[in-house]
Length: 249
Ligand SMILES: [Zn+2]
Image (cartoon, rainbow, N blue to C red; front, side, top):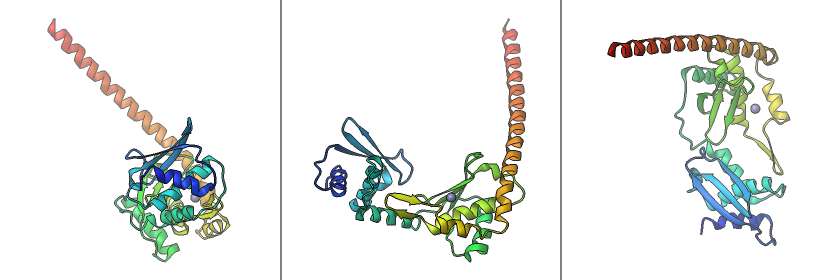
């Protein structure tokens, strides 16, 4: 099967009877994160840019991904067997993904949460510290089975905050997602109910704002101190150079 044709096939399957009004192009690239993909439409060319990881995956599953992307692009809500196939594939991806990223602090948090709330039954995902993000505290990416937690919490002594965020993200891993039409729900009613199980969750949720504000201020002063130290070092370098130049004359 010609690879470029599967985009056209996906289109004709989703919109049967329509003449394919587009030229279809598929580009596999190593520059998109694992199992990522997006679609662009320009001058009648519908181009799918897909992570290289998709290349060996069966055409049916790739067609589901393309249909999902084109449905969003063309605002269609049509169901499709291929889209279901693709979503099931994404849901089981975590089983085959190498778990090679971790950090002792995050691992300890994951273990506490897993033991206490999941009977130790959840397989450890990749665990990474993310950017110093002050509005999004954590995320779970199904496509690389990775929990990312904002570095804001890295130096917070009380582990309950990281645990609270970890719990939310592990719940995502455990619960997967829920599809209705072309909409994907991550925080459906049942998710919200389960989330309430975390001990003192409501209080922690309220305290988070204060904790983040405090860590932000700490980071600000730390940065200021570092900048000052760096400036002083540079000034010393310039001074040395100047002396060197004079030495020549
Ligand atoms: Zn969430």
